[in-house]
Image (cartoon, rainbow, N blue to C red; front, side, top):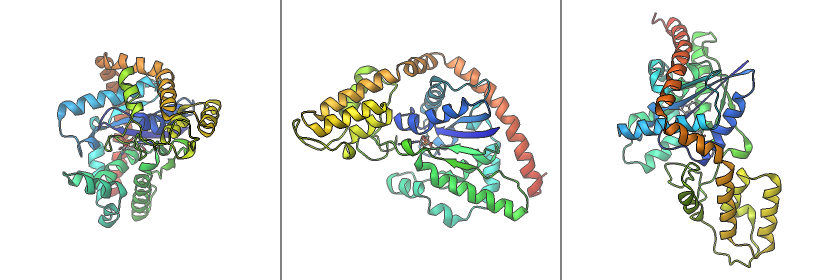
Length: 324
Ligand code: TYM
């Protein structure tokens, strides 16, 4: 039995990058009978950038509804809000006292946020330590994520090894990083990594008209309709390739190379594919967003179960560190 764990920050509605990079591969893993999955909503992490309480609550529901819409079976797994298992904060204190300051100051995500944001708070700096606690608190063995989270997982592995070495015991499980080549970095509408913070994301749960509008906004070069085009350097094609079948991808690539196929045609094909491919998930997402009591109920059950594991692991940590 493998213990799989991953989380999504409640800093907005999950976008296509989250869906393809994290939700779909994680839910696939959860369908294997010999896996046990801990999938959660990282609402404590969202406080680093979101201070509005109502926004946070809505975002938590959006992330929860997305996990459920993609078929996460909460009966046989663990589904929870990070903040409802506050043991994670206690563990963060312990582990942060083993975390070299210099290592954290080199984290890409911190440097990127420190350059862009006005509010550069200490929570942003400690972000990777809280993330390590999310993983170590549940003895997770495998953590599927997109490439942007790779460094955070390397930090987690180093930290766990450092503490194990210090106490000369296998206190923490060293988690394996699981990256799926095909969906490691889903591009956004401007060609950079799709991200809430770059505002370049595609929200597959939006109503038809709005989804179409967003897809039509994808940035391309200015080649004329009749010109042959290079699919490998086109953002629309790259996005299409992340969701289309091999035959559909081949057909669109051939259209690009032949000419007389404009970016407008490609965008329409991408929009139609997104609209039809995720129809069931969109309906499910809307269902859960209209039945928040049910979402709350499922989360509370998951939280009671997840807490049992957290309490046991934290007890082990307290004993090892001399706090019991
Ligand atoms: P977050 O919320 O930014 O993203 C959630 C997941 O989606 C992946 N992802 C992408 N994958 C491919 N292409 C993209 N453009 C793209 N954008 C996002 C992310 O890699 C991630 O897997 N710190 C984490 C949340 C977290 C967590 C954890 C994850 C907190 N604790 C413990 C794993 C384990 C975050 O902000 O992800």
